[in-house]
Image 1 (cartoon, rainbow, N blue to C red):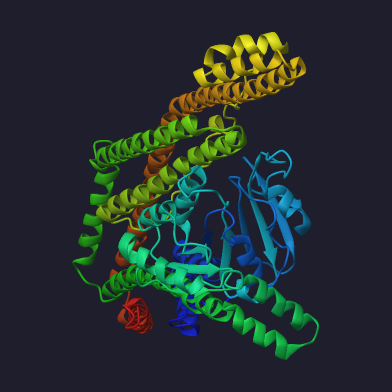
Image 2 (spheres, rainbow, N blue to C red):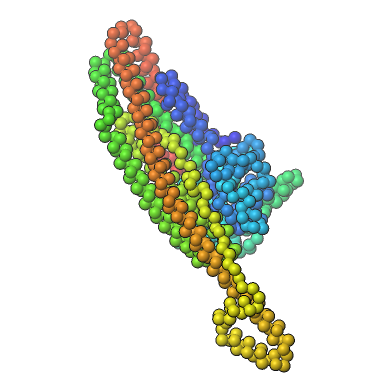
Length: 614
């Protein structure tokens, strides 16, 4: 089961949220009550997302298997060099799903099929299920149940590829980053570059140095890595490092399964995993739970502020305040002005969203330019063995660009909605329900098409093809062989065949690589042309949808507020004709409710106050 709703407050926060929701319902505000209940549910149903990242063959998947004491859960023998992420979450029973493009529900698969859907075919180096974008695995595990989700990212050679961009984009929704290196050598330049970019997206970073059992000099590597972090990623200079051995951890699990508890405890301690697990549980899951608890307490405070204002207004009405009706009428008339066709707030909304669209377009231009430069580098360095990787990296880079744009759009649009709602006195715009899924037009990008050219066959063709490129040394050597052939003519045949075959093979490889680079250049141009044609338009469509959604939400909130004012005015007018005998008990009840609301507001204030240990 997940932990208590919050590290700070715990049961007190649960009771506070339950009582605020009940009072909101009782006082005639079911929407506010539902909002508080949703915040309470979010504390326990949203686990802390820990993104695990590292270069290829650093031991990321083995690390997750060892953390969960599940050998073979994630494939570790074959390279997972795809744009597929594997999310492992807490569940009541074992389950796994492969999520394809446009299918958020996913296809149910077995745990044994996880490698098939997440990895590359070891023979062809192609994905066996190219439409799969994510694999999700649910397990009944105490570490996950403590409030964690582990996201294993694709292992790639060099963290500057499209996969790295996809992982960086995912960090917008991450609570922590687990950066995996090993004891073989110090941090590479691409790893340092990745960390520099990560500082913009996630504050909590921990480092894991794996395979301590395999590399005896891992301590020296660790010291060198820590120095490099201070020099190149100072923001993480104080981050925790955890040297671990996944093999020892899994050996400990095997010993425990065999009933040798003492041996299991010894191996587990030597593995280094207990300290990592403790930090993940208490500081990451616990801190994420605390932050969600604070957010829920803030939501409760907003509802309490509103209920307090309504209750104070009701007490004034019960006291027959002669100015109250005029005050309510003035507020109602002001709200009517906001709802007229000539009101200024819709123009402000249009302006703010135009600025948001321009901001997103500038961000798009910067990111697509960087992706184009990176793709040009792939073109000049393309080899036969890298063609599949290039297509995966470019597609991942395009997906990453969309995720970043979508994250920025959501965040900025919510800020716009909240500011205008506050200006109009219609607070409560807490969500934008608009589809920001990956554009359908970008789900089918062009494929890398390999060209074929007719080749001259036979010895004559080979010699005609490669004779012009032969060096003077080669010609001289062949002349010597010709002289030698006067004595031994069979030698000429053998030497000539070897030379021709070698030249033919070398030239063939050069031609193959030349054609491949031409094909890659054509492929990159086709993909980026499609992205340029579709993504800006998709951005504009999404921003317009957000703008329309925001306008509708604000309009609905103004209508609801107007109804509240009309009820309050009618109630106040009704009290003017009531006797003191009728009003006294209602006033006493209202005063008691007001006192309780103030007590709850003080509790919420304490729960949202900065923690001394934060």
